[in-house]
Image (cartoon, rainbow, N blue to C red):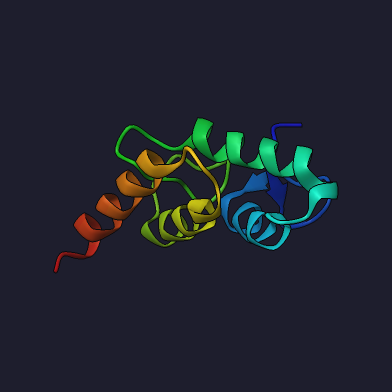
Length: 96
């Protein structure tokens, strides 16, 4: 297991269900290991430009998935850089 959640059990991991899972489980002590693995997954799969694709099967970066991934990391220490680069990618994707 890579720490991600898929849309269905046994399916490839994707940013959206991983982000939502992290948001809902962040304060659950019983889910601590799964949450740590999910945060590590997001850290590992974020591109050098600060973005994420929709799923682990995609290579194209998506602003909406990046915004969601960045939001999911707000509850976790040590993710400032990842959140900042995600926000910059989203801002650059849509302009001002």
